[in-house]
Image 1 (cartoon, rainbow, N blue to C red):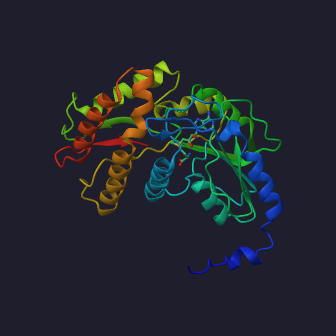
Image 2: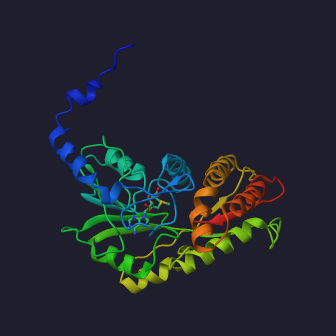
Length: 309
Ligand SMILES: C[S@@+](CC[C@H](N)C(=O)[O-])C[C@H]1O[C@@H](n2cnc3c(N)ncnc32)[C@H](O)[C@@H]1O
């Protein structure tokens, strides 16, 4: 057997404190947050069991990291004119990849990521911390943040207006709150996507499932109103088309379309399995047949569709 290689950087890095990491590790491993339920072979969050419909298993975490790559290619890590931040909050951090990259970019800032699932890596830059938290419960952070960032929580949140009010209350004066969210309705500019397409049926069913579960699937178009209501000043809205598949002529958009196709085909089961069986009452077999049809359309060269960020 070959010998195991020592992480020399870890050994030398005085900022890595094993004692405190061990204590954070064991604390976070209480059964209430890690007794993950398994349904039809997919693993889901345990804290506030049933609150969120997407899995938290390796497949889904890989998809989220892939999604992150697509987002960074499309819009960068963030859009606001951030200057020398000291404290940053990543609301619903997922795999923590955004928070970790921000920690690398701003080594003197403290970055906090929270999520229902403690699925983030243990060895992260010393200025990055993760917490298990329900972002829809009271925000207990003792200090405000120079940036409150929230990306891709579509379908996860019941009360977006309250979430954005909380963000406002925890943003330093002169700081920024940035939400990146979608209008997931598929569109095509050349009518190549037909109204009765399975892709459209998919969004309609998902929207109905979210509605029954008390969640908003399409927050993107409403963000500006909620930001105004919360009291934010200097609001800026930007929109992007996110192509599905490599149909655009522009080489960068073609690549983004491939990223999107990969994450969307990989993610079909994650989007539908729990929501369509538990909330809409479909059988697993019905979900699988339907998903196959949607994926076929995603890959069609004749459909030039996109959704909007
Ligand atoms: C689609 S992922 C996006 C992750 C990350 N923001 C990103 O852009 O890669 C949504 C995340 O929100 C988390 N989530 C859903 N509802 C939540 C809640 N009420 N409180 C905290 N996290 C939540 C999920 O566990 C999941 O990790």
